[in-house]
Image (cartoon, rainbow, N blue to C red; front, side, top):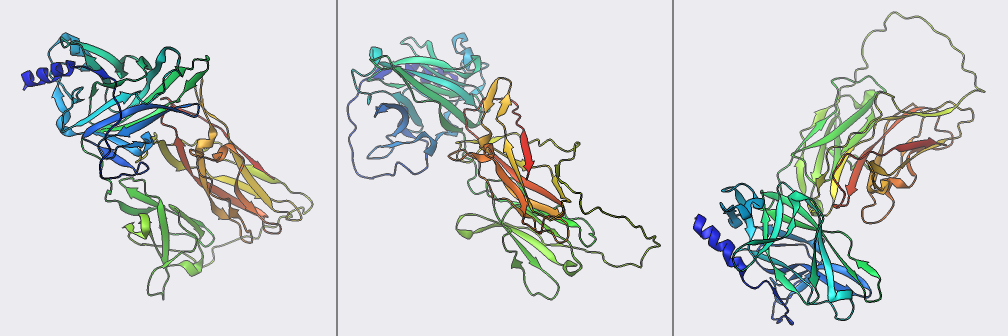
Length: 486
C-alpha cells in the first residue's frame, strides 16, 4: 500500500501549468446560484476574474455541462473518505505530518473518483495588470487539522505553495493565462474554511484586491443535513405565587440551526392545545395568575414549509393561591407623589454575557453564537406617568488590537416581568448586520411603556444572536452594551 502511495505522489510531477482556451458546452444546464456540494470532477476552485474595474474570486464548476461560474459561498468542496493516504517515510514530506499517519489528499493529477481542484487566471484580460500577474494568497485556515497545497517537481520533490501550520498568509505570484493544479492535503476529518485573496497592480499603478473570500471544504462524510432533534422545556418552577414571572425556554438536543418555534397552551376544560398568539421564539415569558393554575404548555420546532421537526412533552403550571392568612402586622408608609425618578439598572454581580464559542453556520459562510442578555430592571416612580423607552447600543468588539463591528450582534427583546397596571412591551427584533443593516451598533429599543402605563418596575431581557465573518481572527472578543432610558 505504501509503494502505491509513493507512486501516487510521484505521479503528480507531470506538467502543472498550462494556458487553455474555451470549454466545450454540451447539454445539461445548471444554476450558478444554487448551493452545491462538489466531490468529483474538475473544478477551478479559485478562479480569478476582472470585470468593470473589480478583481473577484469565483468557482468555475466544470463538473456539469455546460460549465458554470459560482460564488464560493454557494459551494462546499468535499474531500471524499477514499482520499485517505499515509504520509511517506521521506524527510521531504515531513511537513504533512508524522510518517505513516493518515492525511486526505486531492492529487495534482486527476483521479476520476475524487475532486480535482485548481486555480485559474485564464479569464484575465491581457495588458491590464503590471507584470501580467496577480498575487494569490491563502490568508487564513480554520479547521481540525493542518492544510498544505503543494506541487512536485519532475523528480518528486515537493514545491510547497500554501501551508497553514507555519504561519499565514502565504502568497504566490500567478501569471495571467495560468491554469494550475496541485496536491491539496488535509490533516484530519471535519469541516475547514480556507480564506483566499487575490491582489494585483494595474498598469496605471492602482492596486486592486478581491478582499478575503471564504471557501468551505468538508473532509470525509458530510454532516447529516436533517438531524433528529429532541425538544424539551426548561425553567419551570415547581410552584408559583400569583403575580410571579414565568419564563419557559425551549432547548434542542443536539443543537441545530433550526430557530422557528411556536408555543401552545391547554387549560382545564379545553380539549386540545391552541397556539399562543405571537409567541414564536425559544423563550416564552408571562405572569402567573390563579386562572392559569394547572394549565399545560408545550413548544414545537419547525423546519421550512411549516414541517414540525420536534415537539416537547407538555409541562404543567402550578399556581398556589391557597392557605390561611398568616399572622400579620399593618405597616403604613407615605410615598411623596411629587418625587420620583426613572432608573435602569443591571445586577452588578450579573452583568457579563459569556456567549458560547462561535461555530460555523451550516452554510459555512459565517461564525455564529447565541446567548441571553442579563436581566435589565427598569423602575419608574415619576409623577404624571409619562411613559418610558429603554434602548441599547453596542460598541465594537475588541481582541487586543483587533476590532470587529458591533453591528454583527442582534437581539430579540422580551419582557421578563412587569408590575400590575404596567403596559410594557418588548422592542422589535434586530437582526445581526452580517449581510446588511447595523445590528446593535445602532441604538435599538429593548422595551418601552406608553404614557399612563409605565409606573412601577419591569424586567427586560433579550435573546442574543452573533454572526461574524469567517475571516474574523481567533481570539476572545469583548464589547460594551450601553443602555439608556428616556
